[in-house]
Image (cartoon, rainbow, N blue to C red; front, side, top):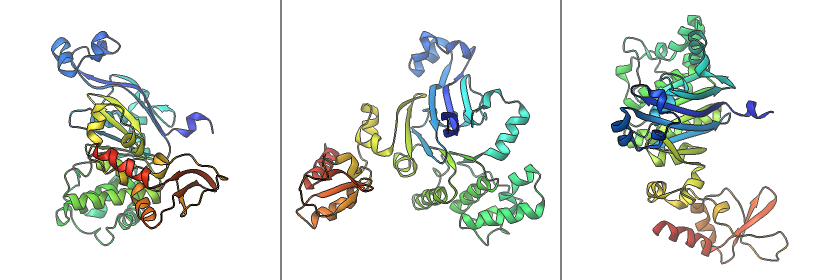
Length: 345
Protein backbone atom coordinates (compact mmCIF):
# COMPACT_ATOMS: atom_id res chain seq x y z
CA UNK A 1 0.00 0.00 0.00
CA UNK A 2 1.18 3.48 -0.74
CA UNK A 3 1.11 6.11 1.99
CA UNK A 4 -2.17 7.68 0.86
CA UNK A 5 -4.13 4.42 1.25
CA UNK A 6 -2.87 3.98 4.83
CA UNK A 7 -4.45 7.22 6.03
CA UNK A 8 -8.21 7.59 6.44
CA UNK A 9 -8.35 11.17 7.75
CA UNK A 10 -5.64 13.80 7.33
CA UNK A 11 -5.71 17.40 8.47
CA UNK A 12 -3.01 19.68 7.10
CA UNK A 13 -2.47 23.15 8.61
CA UNK A 14 -6.13 23.64 9.53
CA UNK A 15 -7.17 27.02 10.92
CA UNK A 16 -10.47 28.37 12.13
CA UNK A 17 -10.46 32.08 12.89
CA UNK A 18 -13.55 34.07 13.84
CA UNK A 19 -13.71 37.79 13.28
CA UNK A 20 -13.29 40.48 10.62
CA UNK A 21 -10.98 39.58 7.74
CA UNK A 22 -10.14 36.31 9.45
CA UNK A 23 -7.91 35.05 6.64
CA UNK A 24 -5.41 37.88 7.22
CA UNK A 25 -4.44 36.24 10.54
CA UNK A 26 -3.04 33.15 8.81
CA UNK A 27 0.73 33.42 8.57
CA UNK A 28 0.81 36.86 10.13
CA UNK A 29 2.95 37.91 13.13
CA UNK A 30 -0.28 38.12 15.17
CA UNK A 31 -1.08 34.45 14.58
CA UNK A 32 0.96 33.29 17.56
CA UNK A 33 -0.39 35.84 20.02
CA UNK A 34 -2.26 34.59 23.12
CA UNK A 35 -6.00 34.43 22.53
CA UNK A 36 -6.97 37.52 24.53
CA UNK A 37 -4.16 39.61 23.07
CA UNK A 38 -5.10 38.54 19.54
CA UNK A 39 -8.71 39.50 20.17
CA UNK A 40 -7.78 42.92 21.55
CA UNK A 41 -5.38 43.67 18.70
CA UNK A 42 -7.31 42.32 15.72
CA UNK A 43 -10.87 41.62 16.84
CA UNK A 44 -10.35 37.98 15.87
CA UNK A 45 -10.39 34.70 17.81
CA UNK A 46 -8.27 31.79 16.58
CA UNK A 47 -10.22 28.71 17.70
CA UNK A 48 -8.01 26.29 15.74
CA UNK A 49 -4.40 27.17 14.95
CA UNK A 50 -2.37 25.34 12.30
CA UNK A 51 -3.48 21.80 13.24
CA UNK A 52 -2.04 18.83 11.35
CA UNK A 53 -2.53 15.12 12.05
CA UNK A 54 -3.25 11.79 10.36
CA UNK A 55 -5.60 9.02 11.46
CA UNK A 56 -5.01 5.47 10.26
CA UNK A 57 -7.82 3.05 9.31
CA UNK A 58 -9.40 1.56 12.42
CA UNK A 59 -7.55 3.93 14.77
CA UNK A 60 -9.18 5.71 17.72
CA UNK A 61 -7.67 9.19 17.78
CA UNK A 62 -8.69 11.19 20.85
CA UNK A 63 -8.45 14.98 21.09
CA UNK A 64 -8.44 16.03 24.72
CA UNK A 65 -8.55 19.57 26.09
CA UNK A 66 -10.26 21.91 28.49
CA UNK A 67 -13.32 23.95 27.61
CA UNK A 68 -12.41 26.57 25.02
CA UNK A 69 -9.33 24.72 23.75
CA UNK A 70 -10.84 24.38 20.24
CA UNK A 71 -11.40 20.63 20.18
CA UNK A 72 -15.11 20.71 19.27
CA UNK A 73 -14.47 23.31 16.59
CA UNK A 74 -11.75 21.08 15.15
CA UNK A 75 -13.94 17.99 14.85
CA UNK A 76 -16.70 20.02 13.20
CA UNK A 77 -14.19 21.32 10.66
CA UNK A 78 -13.52 17.74 9.56
CA UNK A 79 -17.07 17.29 8.26
CA UNK A 80 -17.47 21.00 7.45
CA UNK A 81 -20.22 21.58 9.95
CA UNK A 82 -17.90 24.51 10.56
CA UNK A 83 -16.03 25.92 7.57
CA UNK A 84 -12.26 26.10 8.21
CA UNK A 85 -10.58 29.41 7.48
CA UNK A 86 -7.58 27.68 5.90
CA UNK A 87 -5.96 24.30 5.50
CA UNK A 88 -6.75 20.93 4.02
CA UNK A 89 -8.96 18.10 5.29
CA UNK A 90 -8.54 14.83 3.40
CA UNK A 91 -10.79 11.78 3.75
CA UNK A 92 -9.47 8.84 1.77
CA UNK A 93 -7.32 11.34 -0.11
CA UNK A 94 -10.25 13.57 -1.14
CA UNK A 95 -10.20 17.17 0.03
CA UNK A 96 -13.42 17.82 1.94
CA UNK A 97 -12.96 21.59 1.65
CA UNK A 98 -13.25 21.48 -2.15
CA UNK A 99 -16.40 19.33 -2.24
CA UNK A 100 -19.59 20.83 -3.63
CA UNK A 101 -22.84 20.56 -1.67
CA UNK A 102 -23.88 17.27 -3.29
CA UNK A 103 -20.60 15.48 -2.58
CA UNK A 104 -20.54 16.87 0.95
CA UNK A 105 -24.06 15.58 1.64
CA UNK A 106 -23.09 12.18 0.30
CA UNK A 107 -20.01 12.13 2.53
CA UNK A 108 -22.11 12.85 5.62
CA UNK A 109 -24.80 10.35 4.67
CA UNK A 110 -22.59 7.40 3.77
CA UNK A 111 -19.02 7.71 4.99
CA UNK A 112 -18.94 9.91 8.12
CA UNK A 113 -21.28 9.77 11.12
CA UNK A 114 -21.23 12.04 14.16
CA UNK A 115 -22.28 11.39 17.76
CA UNK A 116 -22.95 14.50 19.84
CA UNK A 117 -23.27 15.15 23.56
CA UNK A 118 -26.96 15.96 23.06
CA UNK A 119 -28.74 12.96 21.63
CA UNK A 120 -31.01 14.89 19.24
CA UNK A 121 -33.56 12.06 19.08
CA UNK A 122 -36.88 12.70 17.37
CA UNK A 123 -39.40 12.49 20.23
CA UNK A 124 -42.40 11.58 18.06
CA UNK A 125 -40.63 8.64 16.43
CA UNK A 126 -40.03 5.21 17.90
CA UNK A 127 -36.50 4.14 18.70
CA UNK A 128 -36.19 1.89 15.66
CA UNK A 129 -37.27 4.82 13.46
CA UNK A 130 -34.74 7.12 15.10
CA UNK A 131 -31.98 4.61 14.43
CA UNK A 132 -33.11 4.14 10.83
CA UNK A 133 -33.34 7.89 10.14
CA UNK A 134 -30.04 8.08 8.27
CA UNK A 135 -31.01 5.13 6.13
CA UNK A 136 -34.33 6.82 5.36
CA UNK A 137 -32.44 9.89 4.14
CA UNK A 138 -30.34 7.59 1.95
CA UNK A 139 -33.54 6.27 0.35
CA UNK A 140 -33.35 2.74 1.76
CA UNK A 141 -36.72 0.96 1.67
CA UNK A 142 -38.64 0.73 4.95
CA UNK A 143 -38.30 -3.02 5.41
CA UNK A 144 -34.57 -3.00 4.82
CA UNK A 145 -33.87 -0.02 7.03
CA UNK A 146 -36.01 -1.44 9.86
CA UNK A 147 -34.12 -4.73 9.70
CA UNK A 148 -30.79 -2.93 9.75
CA UNK A 149 -31.87 -0.69 12.64
CA UNK A 150 -33.07 -3.64 14.72
CA UNK A 151 -29.75 -5.39 14.15
CA UNK A 152 -27.77 -2.33 15.27
CA UNK A 153 -29.98 -1.98 18.37
CA UNK A 154 -29.00 -5.54 19.28
CA UNK A 155 -25.36 -4.59 18.78
CA UNK A 156 -25.56 -1.73 21.29
CA UNK A 157 -27.54 -3.74 23.83
CA UNK A 158 -31.00 -2.32 23.12
CA UNK A 159 -32.65 -5.30 21.50
CA UNK A 160 -36.37 -5.26 22.25
CA UNK A 161 -36.57 -1.50 22.75
CA UNK A 162 -37.26 -0.59 19.13
CA UNK A 163 -40.95 0.17 19.62
CA UNK A 164 -40.38 2.48 22.59
CA UNK A 165 -40.24 6.27 22.40
CA UNK A 166 -37.19 8.32 23.50
CA UNK A 167 -38.83 9.64 26.67
CA UNK A 168 -39.27 6.07 27.88
CA UNK A 169 -35.48 5.54 27.97
CA UNK A 170 -32.84 6.65 30.46
CA UNK A 171 -30.10 9.07 29.47
CA UNK A 172 -27.60 6.26 29.00
CA UNK A 173 -30.02 4.31 26.85
CA UNK A 174 -30.75 7.38 24.75
CA UNK A 175 -27.02 7.82 24.15
CA UNK A 176 -26.89 4.19 22.99
CA UNK A 177 -29.64 5.06 20.52
CA UNK A 178 -27.49 7.94 19.27
CA UNK A 179 -24.60 5.51 18.87
CA UNK A 180 -26.82 3.01 17.06
CA UNK A 181 -28.08 5.73 14.71
CA UNK A 182 -24.48 6.60 13.82
CA UNK A 183 -23.65 2.94 13.21
CA UNK A 184 -26.76 2.16 11.17
CA UNK A 185 -25.45 3.71 7.96
CA UNK A 186 -22.27 1.63 8.30
CA UNK A 187 -19.96 4.66 8.15
CA UNK A 188 -16.24 4.33 7.63
CA UNK A 189 -15.51 7.17 10.06
CA UNK A 190 -17.19 8.08 13.35
CA UNK A 191 -16.75 11.49 14.97
CA UNK A 192 -17.61 11.82 18.67
CA UNK A 193 -17.99 15.26 20.24
CA UNK A 194 -17.96 14.75 24.04
CA UNK A 195 -20.81 12.24 23.73
CA UNK A 196 -20.74 11.04 27.35
CA UNK A 197 -19.99 14.21 29.30
CA UNK A 198 -23.60 14.70 30.42
CA UNK A 199 -23.96 11.15 31.74
CA UNK A 200 -23.61 9.93 35.30
CA UNK A 201 -20.15 8.46 36.07
CA UNK A 202 -21.24 4.81 36.13
CA UNK A 203 -23.26 5.14 32.92
CA UNK A 204 -20.36 7.01 31.35
CA UNK A 205 -18.00 4.16 32.18
CA UNK A 206 -20.44 1.68 30.66
CA UNK A 207 -20.62 3.74 27.46
CA UNK A 208 -16.83 3.91 27.28
CA UNK A 209 -16.73 0.13 27.56
CA UNK A 210 -19.37 -0.03 24.84
CA UNK A 211 -17.23 2.04 22.46
CA UNK A 212 -14.23 -0.20 23.16
CA UNK A 213 -16.32 -3.31 22.51
CA UNK A 214 -17.81 -1.89 19.33
CA UNK A 215 -14.41 -0.82 18.06
CA UNK A 216 -13.14 -4.34 18.59
CA UNK A 217 -16.11 -5.75 16.67
CA UNK A 218 -16.72 -3.23 13.86
CA UNK A 219 -13.27 -1.61 13.45
CA UNK A 220 -14.38 1.91 12.55
CA UNK A 221 -11.99 4.82 12.32
CA UNK A 222 -12.88 7.08 15.24
CA UNK A 223 -12.02 10.63 16.24
CA UNK A 224 -13.18 11.19 19.81
CA UNK A 225 -13.38 14.57 21.56
CA UNK A 226 -13.28 14.75 25.37
CA UNK A 227 -12.25 17.01 28.25
CA UNK A 228 -11.67 13.96 30.49
CA UNK A 229 -8.07 12.70 30.53
CA UNK A 230 -8.97 9.31 32.00
CA UNK A 231 -11.54 8.83 29.21
CA UNK A 232 -8.87 9.78 26.67
CA UNK A 233 -6.37 7.32 28.15
CA UNK A 234 -8.96 4.54 28.21
CA UNK A 235 -10.22 4.96 24.64
CA UNK A 236 -7.39 6.35 22.56
CA UNK A 237 -4.83 4.54 20.45
CA UNK A 238 -3.28 8.01 20.31
CA UNK A 239 -4.10 11.19 22.17
CA UNK A 240 -3.69 14.82 21.17
CA UNK A 241 -3.59 17.30 24.05
CA UNK A 242 -5.05 20.60 22.84
CA UNK A 243 -4.59 24.06 24.35
CA UNK A 244 -5.57 27.47 22.96
CA UNK A 245 -6.31 26.07 19.51
CA UNK A 246 -3.13 24.06 18.93
CA UNK A 247 -1.76 20.61 19.82
CA UNK A 248 0.68 20.57 22.73
CA UNK A 249 1.48 16.86 22.45
CA UNK A 250 0.42 13.89 20.34
CA UNK A 251 1.27 10.33 21.35
CA UNK A 252 0.06 7.03 22.70
CA UNK A 253 -1.46 7.07 26.19
CA UNK A 254 1.75 5.53 27.49
CA UNK A 255 3.94 8.13 25.78
CA UNK A 256 1.89 11.01 27.15
CA UNK A 257 1.99 9.66 30.71
CA UNK A 258 5.65 8.59 30.63
CA UNK A 259 7.05 11.59 28.77
CA UNK A 260 4.85 14.70 29.05
CA UNK A 261 5.94 17.33 26.52
CA UNK A 262 5.78 20.29 28.89
CA UNK A 263 4.54 21.49 32.27
CA UNK A 264 1.00 21.88 30.95
CA UNK A 265 0.76 18.19 30.04
CA UNK A 266 2.65 17.16 33.18
CA UNK A 267 0.04 18.95 35.27
CA UNK A 268 -2.72 17.06 33.46
CA UNK A 269 -1.22 13.61 34.04
CA UNK A 270 -0.05 14.24 37.60
CA UNK A 271 -2.86 12.24 39.18
CA UNK A 272 -3.01 9.48 36.57
CA UNK A 273 -2.28 6.04 38.13
CA UNK A 274 0.88 5.26 36.15
CA UNK A 275 0.71 1.56 36.98
CA UNK A 276 -2.51 1.30 34.98
CA UNK A 277 -1.05 2.99 31.88
CA UNK A 278 2.68 2.26 31.66
CA UNK A 279 3.74 -1.11 30.29
CA UNK A 280 6.69 -3.41 30.78
CA UNK A 281 8.15 -2.03 27.55
CA UNK A 282 8.49 1.44 29.09
CA UNK A 283 10.17 0.44 32.37
CA UNK A 284 12.27 -2.57 31.29
CA UNK A 285 16.06 -2.73 31.24
CA UNK A 286 18.06 -4.27 28.40
CA UNK A 287 18.44 -8.06 28.25
CA UNK A 288 19.58 -10.69 25.76
CA UNK A 289 18.71 -14.30 25.04
CA UNK A 290 22.00 -15.79 26.26
CA UNK A 291 22.65 -13.75 29.39
CA UNK A 292 22.44 -16.79 31.70
CA UNK A 293 20.02 -15.10 34.09
CA UNK A 294 17.13 -16.89 35.74
CA UNK A 295 13.65 -15.46 35.39
CA UNK A 296 10.40 -16.02 37.20
CA UNK A 297 8.51 -16.18 33.91
CA UNK A 298 8.06 -14.62 30.48
CA UNK A 299 5.76 -11.60 30.20
CA UNK A 300 4.57 -9.72 27.13
CA UNK A 301 6.10 -6.29 26.65
CA UNK A 302 2.59 -4.81 26.45
CA UNK A 303 1.64 -5.95 29.97
CA UNK A 304 0.73 -3.00 32.19
CA UNK A 305 2.79 -2.42 35.34
CA UNK A 306 -0.20 -3.12 37.60
CA UNK A 307 -0.22 -6.72 36.36
CA UNK A 308 3.53 -7.10 36.94
CA UNK A 309 3.31 -6.34 40.66
CA UNK A 310 1.79 -9.68 41.82
CA UNK A 311 4.15 -11.61 39.55
CA UNK A 312 7.18 -9.99 41.15
CA UNK A 313 5.70 -10.37 44.63
CA UNK A 314 5.58 -14.14 44.19
CA UNK A 315 9.27 -14.51 43.30
CA UNK A 316 12.64 -12.93 43.99
CA UNK A 317 13.54 -13.44 40.33
CA UNK A 318 13.01 -10.77 37.64
CA UNK A 319 10.65 -11.13 34.69
CA UNK A 320 11.83 -11.77 31.15
CA UNK A 321 10.02 -9.34 28.84
CA UNK A 322 9.23 -10.76 25.42
CA UNK A 323 7.81 -9.50 22.16
CA UNK A 324 6.56 -12.60 20.41
CA UNK A 325 9.41 -15.11 20.62
CA UNK A 326 12.10 -12.48 21.15
CA UNK A 327 13.53 -11.37 24.48
CA UNK A 328 13.44 -7.56 24.57
CA UNK A 329 14.13 -6.69 28.21
CA UNK A 330 13.97 -7.48 31.90
CA UNK A 331 11.88 -6.02 34.72
CA UNK A 332 12.65 -6.45 38.41
CA UNK A 333 11.13 -5.08 41.60
CA UNK A 334 13.40 -2.04 41.53
CA UNK A 335 12.11 -1.02 38.09
CA UNK A 336 8.50 -1.22 39.25
CA UNK A 337 9.27 0.68 42.46
CA UNK A 338 11.04 3.39 40.47
CA UNK A 339 8.00 3.78 38.19
CA UNK A 340 5.71 4.05 41.20
CA UNK A 341 7.97 6.56 42.98
CA UNK A 342 7.93 8.81 39.91
CA UNK A 343 4.16 8.97 40.38
CA UNK A 344 4.62 10.36 43.89
CA UNK A 345 7.29 12.78 42.76
